[in-house]
Image (cartoon, rainbow, N blue to C red; front, side, top):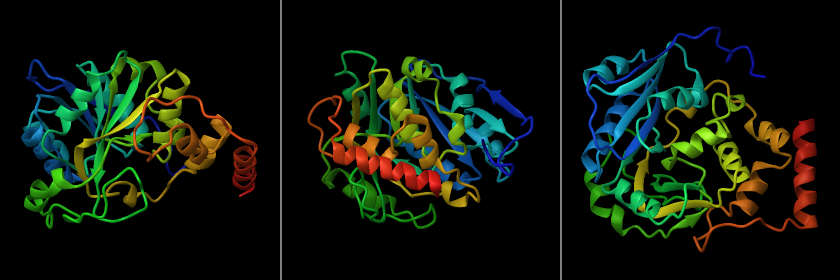
Length: 305
């Protein structure tokens, strides 16, 4: 149950297909945005400038009281809109109704796409033998957070005003990073068939905290074992430009625990092996007694906390 400050009573939500859309597009890129117009402009400019292929770009605008709706309409982009901030989960599910391609990409508005980000993702897609895969780019971040899945620290700025694009473009290919296991984060790509099969993002995690590992768990439940981060596909991530504005964040770790009977940490570490170098597709792990006890203690603490 969401608290009253996040519940939305009959929100005004609408979808707006672009008047003219390009043919022969490869990906449908969905970008939720919440009053981040300057980041959004930079994000879309990077996608248009640095993509190898043509793509459909779909924006979901939460509130859009910063001029972002006018800008999106002026640039003839597909978009959906809500008068209130309805969070990432609802936003992604609404924007999905505008998708016109076989592949859905989830992209954040506080990201800058490096050259050929899409080429390397599609090269990986072409290696797949079926539609059961979840593949992502690798983020370059300005600060070190201990996340083994990203390249950090490599500081090219924290906002559009101080962004050192020249430094990034000159150096991004030389930063060391191999393919890695266990992706749950954007920019991510999967077949639309698979997105629909698991029902998109789960709204009980609104506004979105822990919706990523939950989505990965739903994919795991239907048999996906390829959760691959592609080292050569890169984006610069300005970090937490929307989540940092939230005044309410659901206890997503507890919701995950109650829903799946294990902690998200156990799932991402031992099932997805998140952050390890890529070797092969995953298999069902053997969870020993120590892991089970550790997970049980976490469950007790979180349920009492």
